[in-house]
Image 1 (cartoon, rainbow, N blue to C red):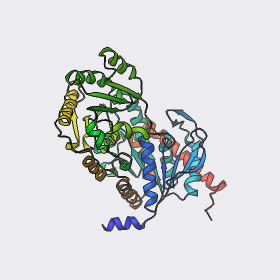
Image 2: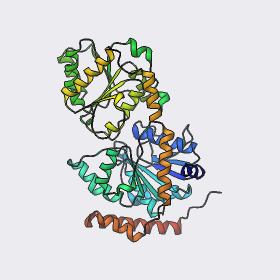
Image 3: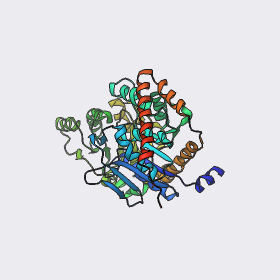
Image 4: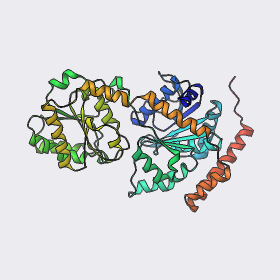
Length: 432
C-alpha cells in the first residue's frame, strides 16, 4: 500500500514506441492506445512514436489525449520500417530531449523502431523497457535469426522487460538471454464495455460456434478443415460463423463445398474490430485453434461477450481464463471436436454459465487500469535501478557472441559519437 501511494505521487515522462499503432488495427495497437490513455489518467506525461501512415504524418493528438509522433520512415514490409540506426538517431534524440523523456518503452519483437529507440535511449542515458507480445519457436530459421542476431543484442542493455504471460516470459528469457528477475509479467486487457453480452440472443439463437481469426497456418486454420465436418456429422443443427480472411480460406470453402455445409458454415470474411461484438453475441461457443499464442486476446473478448470458450492449450492460453470459462484440448482435430461437442451438450442441457455472470467475471480479471498500475511498478523499478557503466554495456554485447557482439559494440560507439556531435552543433532547447 505504501508503494502504491508513492506511485500516485510520481509523474513520469514516457515514450511508447512501436511500428504498430493507429490507424492500423491489431492487438499491439490496441494495447498502446489504452495503456497510454490510462497512464495519462494516472498523471503521467505520455507520447507515442510510430511511423507515418499515408497522409497521417507529423504530430497528432488522439481523442484520449495521447500525443503521437508519426515519423517519415520508410515502411518495407507488413507495417515494419527499414532499420537505419544512425539516420533515425536525429529524430529520436530530438523528440526524447524535447519531451524530457525518462522512460522509453518499446513494443514488439517485430518492430524495428522499438529496437532502435531502445539503443538510442540508453546512449542518451534514458531508462528503457521492452514488452514482448509474441511467442517464438526455437527450430525455424526466422525465429533463430530473430533471437540470435536481434534480441540477444537489442535487449542486452534494456533495463526491464515485460511479457504478457508466464509462458511468454520463459520464452523471452531463453531467446534473449535475460535475467528472469528483470522480466515482469503484465497481462493484456480489453475494454469490457465494448463487449457486452446479449442474453436474449444467447438463449434464443440456434446453437452457434463462432470462429474469429486470421485464416493462416499459425492460427490453426488447417485444423478447422477437419473439426467442422466432425462436429456437423455428430450434431445436425449446429452452425459455424467464421470471421476472418487469409490464405487458408480457400481450403475452408472447399471443405464446405465437399461436405455440403453452405447453410451451416457461414464465411463472413475480414471483420472490422468495431463489428466483433456483433458477431460474437450471435453464438454461445467460441472456438480458438491457434498453434501458438503468448496470450490470445480473442478468447478474453469472447468470454466477455458471454461465450463458452473451446481452445487449444498452447503457449500462454492456459493462463488466460479459469476452467469454468474454457475447455482446453490438444491440437488434434478429434480432441478439439470432442471439446466443441462437450460445450454443445452443456449448452443444450442449460449447464452453461449465464452470459452476464461470465461478463462480470472477465470484467474483474482484465481491465486497463490494472495493467497501467502494474506497468507503473515496472517503470519505478527501472528508475530505481542503478545505471550500468559504458564498459559494462559493451561487455553485455560481447556476452552474446564475439562476432556480432563487436558489430553491435561498434554500432553503439558510432551512436555515442553522433550524439556528442549533435549535442555540440544541434543542442535541443528546453521548452519555455
